[in-house]
Length: 337
Image (cartoon, rainbow, N blue to C red):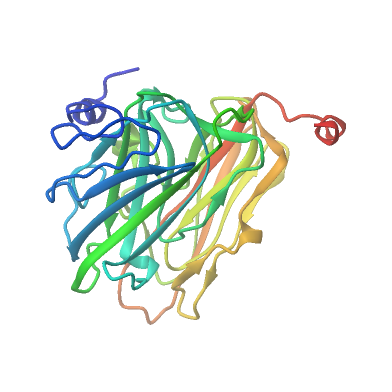
């Protein structure tokens, strides 16, 4: 892996034993362990059975963002005591007393495997899961999962929206469902694509109207597109979408074959405030669809900003594609599976 400045910065963080953050209180690496962290870190990782829960906070909003990954609290590194497969995840944002908060309070949660290089972003560590304000509950098709190796350094980052109104004791959780130990699993690769630049090493190539917040959305209808070439042949089983307020559509298209592979429409309020991606808008299919290194692809996102809206919005259109390597099985083979 190329030692990009970002990766060097990440790897400078101390790493402790399994399910522990370096430099703070360590606990046993038992399968059902919980990490008690100091108040400065404000991140807790616990495993109970087949559920791993990461808890962030409490902290008071608004809060600033630190570094290229816009962390609201210190980045946290942890490890698993055994090889496990991630098969689903979900997120939430709320106050310490359990009161739910608007999803727009959460800017993003990132889960990064520092010991595995990402396929979509050469030389960078693998971004294998995450969430923004969409907060969709993710569950891969049965028998498929993302492998998380024993003692691999896994890093989690949370960023709360810096424009949120003053709010006391804000917390968030990221809950990961793990396959029961010993379950036969087929490994999924994770491939990130976006209309906006998604690779940290490519940030210098962003458009003039693009920043860490996304692409500037002007009043009226705006269509943004970006060409894409895949770096692996794969069969996409699950696609996790991400968009911001004012989004009307994100899509992935095969331009060579003139096929729309993904077309994802969010539910929004009348003023364009994002509500959610309804379950039928989130692609999940054991048969899957194919992508390859030969064809030309394009990402598309459509926004509508009301003409009277005074505030400048920034848009994103991203997918995390969970895929197996190679071609999709034939229909008959899938039926026999």
